[in-house]
Image (tube, rainbow, N blue to C red):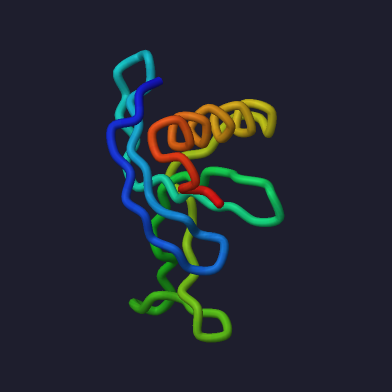
Length: 96
């Protein structure tokens, strides 16, 4: 896997957005990268949930649904660890 881009954006647990290229050539953009309580993880790209032609909100927060997902928690965890490792190697402290 190769890190193609990193855009820092800090809000709550969110630390920024990453783009990666997988060994098979698939490029995934707009991965959300989070960190909290010494743990970091990656969220897959999403799209807003729609309801009656409007973006669905709960407590004033827009709701999203993932457009990609892993077949198992273990695969997702390995992917998160690898992406976070690539970010930390190139941008030390980015996930603090």
